[in-house]
Image (tube, rainbow, N blue to C red; front, side, top):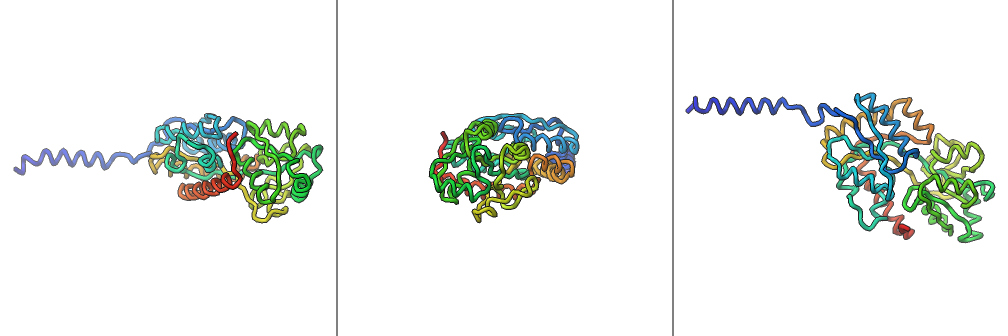
Length: 326
């Protein structure tokens, strides 16, 4: 009987040894190019952040990170693409606040922001800045904006890059906290909105520092306040909205990276480590700072908690302001 068991046992031991020697999931990752899915058009802050990080991470990991712009439906088209992608670490979503706000805005999403993604890392924040065309309004401060709006309820307008964008939500929060009446004018993207602001068709806008800064520097737009809790290094002389007259005001536009749910933890950890290393690179910091972005980083667990908190805050603002898709 002993002899009859030897061969099967030997075979089992050999198989066990092979299994034990098998490489851990993600040990050879990445073995081919990685696709960044950016759910908005090229040229914006999100696109710039993805390309900057991709270059730095590509040098670290010995592969290329290719940006694929899948714009539309407030970021939902690109998010759905990644939610359905194979969870192997080769399709990654770069996303902004819309991930937290869209569940409250869209009656039915074809993905679940909480269940269909594996968080990797918070990447950066890019403050919005309240700007006005000095040739259209004489406002030079937040107090001026509020005083003018109270004197003429409904007479003043603020532009946005579309319903539910951080630019729009910054305006809604401002109007709510200041207890004023202003007309929201949504556009299909920041570009057309800024164009009309420069052209004098609208009064104000909470634009991204990335696109507003050149116009502020040229004198075509006046910067009144930034929306974040602290001042921006890109515009250090511009106060926060809270400093300028609305204590407690804060809206922080953020950018983060997610993989499809089910991506091996080893791959998520490898991507997280590479992102954090890239965000700490002085050259990357300088490049991001130049567009008004402030590198953040962090663990997947921190991003998961942050998304949950932002989702709840977004839901409350959408409900309180009765924000509807148009």
